[in-house]
Amino acid sequence: MANLVKFASGLGLGALLLTAACATSPSGTPEDTAERRARLAAVSLLPDCADAETVTGELTPRIPDCRMTARPSRLLLSLKSDPADQQIFGPSGFLTVSVIDRRGALIGEFSEITNGEYAYPSFQDVNGDGLDDLIIPRATDAVNRVHSLWLQQEAGDFVHVGEVTGSEVTWASRGYVAAIRQTGAADWETGYYRVLAGKLEQVALTRSTGVRAPGRNDPCDIVEIAPGLHPQRFCPRR
Image (cartoon, rainbow, N blue to C red; front, side, top):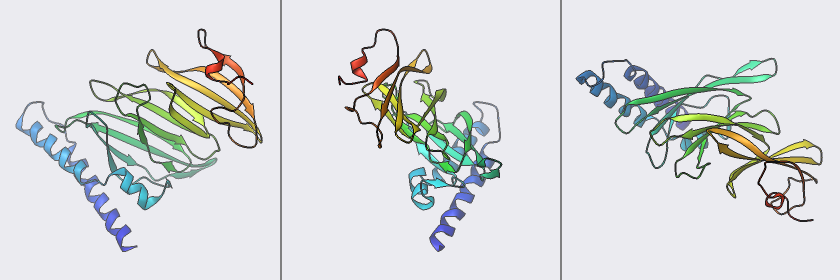
């Protein structure tokens, strides 16, 4: 318990410094340089989000203020969340992500509403461009979770491209995002997605049955498929 209190105290100091560092000033002035340095110093005081997760567990009523580092750009992401409030359909919260570059300049800020307890965001290279993309669990109170996808851009910042729902999601499956959804006691659908024209689009949908989630080589039926794609890429021959 003493370690947890000490940990929480450190988070409060980091959040206070980050708030103080966010005052605006004209670009290129000594004040601007000092602001950037203060912002970097404040974020560096925050614990890594992976370390915070070991303290709170996978699901938590609140994600402590923490930081993530995107590869290979080394962009710094700081996370701040409101405590999850109990609503009619369960707890709901608000997660805000701030992005700064290696010089401490604030690049962007975005937020997501979470239904259910918070689950920590993670990085995956979803579109194969070598950049870490951000996945934010946005609904955690059901068998099929909702995941919001933000793609890292070459020039910096992150752009929202869509959402995926599933009980199991593979973010790099033979060039696709594969989301398995449980639709009944022994019924499953698997949606396959690609990022097309800046949006996450479903390109195939399969259906299968069984007491467990379907594996890669389990038989299935094609429900929908985009033109030019071969069905056997998604459903093996029975």
